[in-house]
Image 1 (cartoon, rainbow, N blue to C red):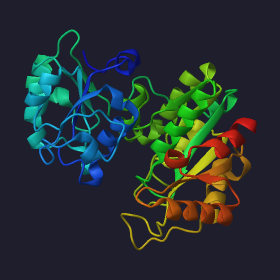
Image 2 (spheres, rainbow, N blue to C red):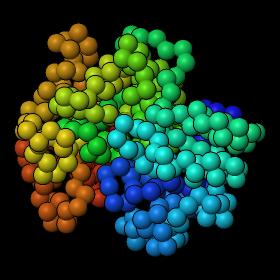
Image 3 (cartoon, one colour):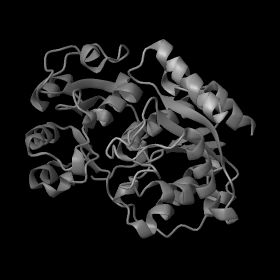
Amino acid sequence: MSNPTPEIVSQPQRLAILQHGGFSTRHGKTGLSLLRYRGAEVVAVIDRETAGRSLREVSKMPDVPDIRVVASAEEALASKPTALAIGISPSGGIVREEWWTDLRTAIRGGVSLWNGCHTPLLSDPVIAAAVRPGVYVWDMRREPAGLKPGSAAARKLPCKRVLFVGTDMNIGKMTAALEFDREARARGVKSAFIGTGQTGMMICGSGMCLDAVRVDYASGAVEAELMRHGPMNDVLWVEGQGSMLNPASTATLPLLRGTQPTHLVLVHKAGMKHLHAFPDITIPPLQAVVEFYERVTTAAGALAPARVMGIALNTWGLDDATARAEIAAAAAATGLPTTDAVRYGTKAILEAILAD
């Protein structure tokens, strides 16, 4: 079986994470996010660099399982995982040659494979032959079937639709959206996180990879997810992708058009002055970015407006005093409630959205 149903992948698992080199580079974000949001299900982590060390030590996450990192899938099989997720997102999304042995060993051992890379695992004849009832391959970077161009249909949904937009790529839009969804659910709100990339899909068990969709159908793919989940929920928290400020990014505009958002949350990395991949491009003042996203959303009045309701500031790596100072500075610069959703919660922005 390939492309399992959301019901299958969202149910509790015994997860192994393939994380070779992912603790020492920026490419390990998928595995780290799985540890943060599905950590209780993790029974093995595979990383040659840190094998033998404590997972809590190498991940710097005190709440993850107290297990030892192993060097190979063969060792991980002793923990009886039900699924192995590729936790590394390499440049270009290509499955690296040195991973294939671990992947083949896992599926031969009865472990399903979760793949967020562009390379389809089912293209490997050894892996394809090992698929059997109860053991599947989830190649999630595939275009959903039956797509249509966008039609702005989501604006007719009665639910709130909150899109997370950013000043750059890879700064925490997914994490912020997950934290808002978690807090809303804790308050009893009918709330859903809409995953638009492979990591979000692994965490919530559903969604679609926007970067696997042809541009003509990109807004329609987003719209289809909104129409699927909107009638059952009061609030949808839509994972943002890319940034309108980044010349290499093409994902944000289809998200704006497919979501037809009622509210926006702007995500920014504290202290970041230039785009990570383009140091010659300066990030404008946050207030200018707020105004820009609001203007683009309304399309000169053709579409409904959506306000930026707050700033989700990523203060990772800063001490508490510095983080709080950065948050206060962003709030003063924009006049908007500002928080680091992971460190300090979502209360002020969440309450403003729910009350609006």
